[in-house]
Length: 276
Ligand code: KIV
Image (cartoon, rainbow, N blue to C red; front, side, top):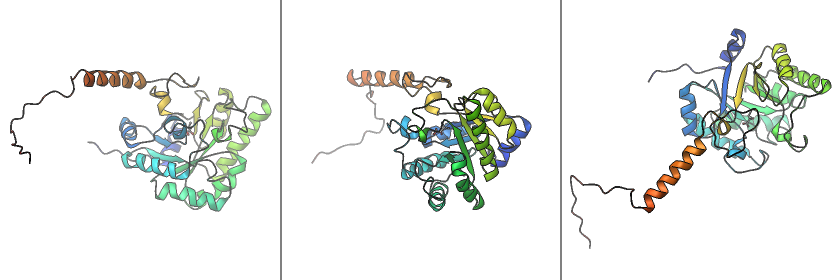
């Protein structure tokens, strides 16, 4: 198999400069990571969305650092080419810079991530600055920040007034100034995302933020039809794996119940079995 060059942060900056879009999806295990990596994904994100789509939680808040290290290890074992980014889960970076350094360090050292992602703007600029200064690359995440679901009174579209759009632009600039190498813009109006993207020299990665961002990210379980009937309005289902797995599971159950699986084998080298 052909060897592919590993995607680096510098490559993402180059893509922005050349006007080439960046493709990013979430991955939580080795099997899916291997497929996405081979398909040529630029960035794989071990999102704390793992809590909602794979661990059965209602929000991302219960996800622990140990959960994230576990899933990041699984993804990194199967990733040869994509840049691997791991989410810092709730309360692993908000309580202080030293805490954040130790916790981000685990995602890099034990998990095998190349970078971490964290939610927030000005409130975490000092943490971003410190992590970057000790060599841990940080991707920012502003707009709809799922770890603040209660503060936002639900998963609501953000930056819808001139004032909140200006505050979001400030946050984006502060993150860039603090050294973030990219920033996710989640659930904000297309025009706000366009302005942020034009104002920054680092790439913006949109989710529910329209087509003007430098790249796009989706939760892979949404993109592949693994989240039941619910699909966020901005997502697109690229495959209906839920349907395919359902059909396959029913076919298997039917075969087992009717005795069609397994088939009887004709042993070409029969072994004599003596029962004591
Ligand atoms: O956790 C996650 O999957 C994310 C993406 C939605 C950007 O943060």
